[in-house]
Image (cartoon, rainbow, N blue to C red):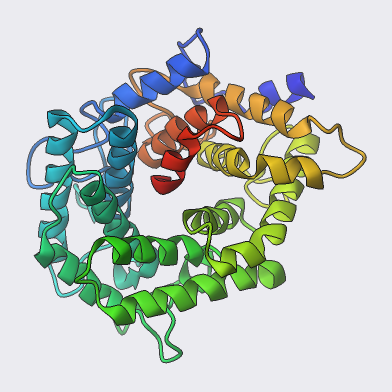
Length: 389
């Protein structure tokens, strides 16, 4: 099985890793890349914004508020590991300045901001609860770690945008159309489901940090968090990425009654994913089928398993070896390491065009490689849980 997985991912487009010294050096390479001049725009109108992906020359086709929120969260994680320094303060401040400009750029700011002329993007005809929540969570986490003083005007503006997503039942909708001619596709990101636990958890994190956050938003987030995790047992996502978002949301609020109630379902679903990955030789994009190899999903699965490994070991089926989680996680780590390039970061998928080096995959993978080094009782996992991107 190990040889199977190590060679499963197609390699015709992605640049193989130049790192020969293992996961620790790969993690350090991703850290350096994320603190370099590619993940975050360093000049021009959009200075401080985080890119979705970049090409081999470091050019970004678009910047993304959601990923800028992720980047703030990752900077908080870096500060938790290494302390606050001038460089990370500068980066966090630049990200906040761009978010402030973005938030007031229009009555309804764009979901994806393209740097060059581009065709219509359906995402820009809607407001997304998930994206706004990730912005608010990033601001809260960097403020908690002392990287920024959160701008109250920005917090209020994001809160106002979030309030537009509270439905009549007191919970957040996944998105709301902002144009009468909007044609939003029916997909997991446009309808409610377990993945919203990550967004709702982000608002709860912000509510604990910002006393100015309206109580109605915290109440809506709490209700959404509970409903999202309750739905995990009945109608969980068929897409691995969204399923893992649901688990990540639960991990952000470990003491919440909804998390405690959902834990058996999360463990079962992660167990099923590990078993299916072992039989396929790679982590599938779709639970019912295989789909393309996505490295962000590989990293997400490693992070989730690091927290749920004790429960997973107890839940594995009798047909599998008791140490399968550890063996399979080691193989998943090898897949990530294989595709990391110190100069380019990591691609979204080995199948992606060679110009797509993905920023959120780099953040997920950097944390995954750290988590893979930790034993189940490692105290450092507490910091990772608080700052999970």
